[in-house]
Amino acid sequence: MKRTVAALLDIEIDEATNLEFKIAVTRAPGVELLETMSFVHDGNPIEPREIIAEHGTRIHLLDCAPGKLIVSYDATVIGRAEPSSVGDYDVSKYLRPSRYAEADKFFGFVAGQFDLATPPAELLLEVTRWVSTHLSYVPGTSRGTDSAVDTLLAGAGVCRDYSHLTISLLRAVGIPARLVAVYAPGCDPMDFHAVVEASIDNVWRVVDATQLAPRSNLVRISTGRDAADTAFLDNHGGSITLHASEVRAVVEGVLDNDDYATLTSIG
Image (cartoon, rainbow, N blue to C red; front, side):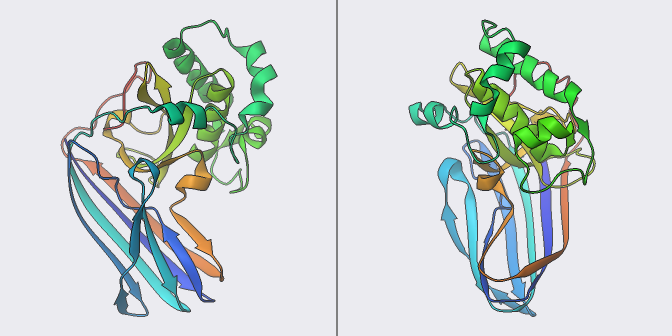
């Protein structure tokens, strides 16, 4: 499999600040990654500092003075990544409530919606179908501070909101779950996309209640508890304005079909 992905960000920095970017593809066994990345500040190239976070998430750090910043990333991804392993601490961490996925508020709710004796693999698909049928995908209906509870009450949102509700319900029924930011060939509208990974028989399986893109074509960017860990841009300090962002993700050949009723992993 060969996939090409790209991101372009146009940012105005009004006050000096520290920025974090999570737009680079995660390096993984089984995948050949060819990439270029540039940061140009008022016409001058500058070099970020890269740190590797949990699960291989790559964070690029930049101290920026006021001015115009153009960030460009292009990558070719060849092959399929091996399924990531599930560690003992993963099970503990991804069953806990988090900032946007407050699973502890859903314990009573899930008891009335799902048969908790259902085998985990089947329960995973049931929860995902439930979210898919009970939410409407409506851009602009949610805020960046909305949590899973807000999404349930609103009955609408975007991929981030679908993921947070799915994660909360899965954790509440006892299935470890986490959010993954991905490049998603076939996604419409094209943007950075958010999906969910759940631990089934000690293998991370990916589900997507939005059904916006085939799961087999997804490319991992970042992995964490919720959007607080996986946002493509974090600003620490001064004021910035994101004027524009463009994302591209395509697969060579024919886009895969996905019936969303089978177990698969991000490759």
